Structure formats: C-alpha cells, structure tokens
Amino acid sequence: MESDTVLVTGGAGFIGHHLTSTLLSQGRKVKVLDDFSSGTELPTHPLLTVIVGDMSESSVREEALHEVKSVINLAAIASVPLCESKPKLSSRVNYLAAQGLFKDAFRLGVSTIIQASTSALYGVPNELPLTEKSPTKPIGNYGLDKQKAEESLLSFHEHPVCALRLFNVFGVGQKRDSPYSGVLTIFSDNINKNLPLKIFGDGHQSRDFIHVNDVVSAFILCLNDLENNGTNSKVSGKKFNVCSGNSVTLLEVIDSFSSFTNTDIEVNFESPREGDILHSLGSFEFLNNQIDWKPSENFTERLRELL
Image 1 (tube, rainbow, N blue to C red):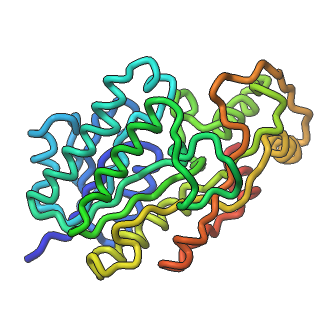
Image 2 (image 1 turned 60 degrees about the vertical axis):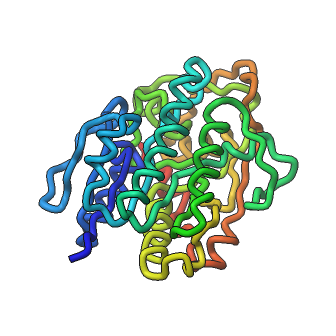
C-alpha cells in the first residue's frame, strides 16, 4: 500500500505548527523533522511522528524520508541578521540542506515536494505590486540562499514540484521573544506589556501581511493538486506569490491596535535601518488563476487576535 505520509521539515516552527495541525485534522499521516533550535513542542497525535535532528545530515534526511509520499520544506533560518553574521550557516541550512533533501527525496521515491520560498527574493522592487514575473534581486545571504533553493527544486522538471513565495506571515502562535518574530507580533507583545513601540524610519513603510491560515490553505491546495495530477498539475514546476494583495503602513497598524485598546500608544522613532525595504505589495493573481486560491482572512480581525 502506498504511503500517505507528508513530511513537514521545520514543522515545529510557527507556520509548521499550523500546517501540521491542519494536515492531521484532514486525516493525513505527518512526519515532522525539526532541530528545535527555534521550534516548540508539538501536541502528541496518533498520526504524528516527530524526528529531532539536523536536516543538513544525510542520515537524518534518510530517516525522515522513509515511507514518505510528499514533502513540504519549511526548514530554514529565517533570521536575516543571523544569516548575515553567519553566511556559512545560512548557506548550509537554507540552500545546501534543502538541495540535499530534494535529491534524497526523489532518489527514495517521494512523489511531490513544495518549497517554502520568500518574497525576499524580489529585493527592492522597481514597481508594485510584485508578480512572479518581477525581477529577482535578493539582498543579503537569506534571500540569495532561498533563491538558490527555489531554483534547485524547480530544476526537477520530471517531478511534481512548486515553490510558494511567502510574504509577511502573521498570526497567533508566533514566538514573541524570537528573532524570527514579525513586526506585528513584536508590536502586540509590547502593547500587552505597556511598553513603547519602536519604528525604524517614519512609519510610512508598508507591508503585505498574510495570515498563517491563508498560507496553510495555499500549501494544502497545491499539495493536493500536485499529488492528484502529478506533472500535469497547474502548479507543477512553478513559483507563486502567497500574499494578501493589500499593503498596510506601520502607522496604520498602530492606529488599529490603538482603536482596539482605546489608548494612545507610545511610539519611538529611530533612524531607518540600512537595507530595509520601504514598501512591499504582492499579487496573488497567478495562484488564483491556477487553483482558485485567494486569501480569506480579515486583516483587522486577525490583528485584534494578537492582543
């Protein structure tokens, strides 16, 4: 009998928790591979197997890939400062380990792989919204290594694969004390602790925030289409933006938080950080055209949940 197991690398992370939970609720067997350097413990479940290990090691990959049907690769060092300060580590985890995973997976008979890619591949945009045809010019080691991993996976033309370029993912469950936390999590944590907020720049910088539930639905829709249709899938061999299609400034975010709490929130403005991108906005039209995916979560209501 063919295995129905999905391997989720990095499954103990923020997105991984949500994705694993949803797959299990759909009756899928799930293996999670994570080194728990930043992840948190997963609830026990009869369909869940957790492997603690470093994906960079071939023996660990071999164990994790045993009797697996499909792979969703979320494992990465997402901390840009850490990738900049430790380029060899960034390359080892974000590119070389991913490349090794893809090669081993197909050698061992895995049918389908989806790579969690990133909007960081676009670098500083020439025009908005960003589409999959926009030029890629990543800034720094994180974006460069994620780009190489994406290209590596999409080079396996004879297998059903795709890459999802995630924009600014947020939602309940992001670790508030982690260097990987997004700005919304940091803001909400400070507000709950009655601490001032820190903004680098004037606050008019804007981001395309996408809720983790919508990200999970994109992964699962693509997974189902690839598993059911193989290389004839409309998403096979392609990369897609996973975004909300709307941009919000940091000042607008703070205004929303202020309206929820009925208080004036103290904001400290500091000099802009070198390399920070001022504006980000994506188009999800391509993915919508292929498999009818679109974001469904209400940003304002999901923002309120963070408090």
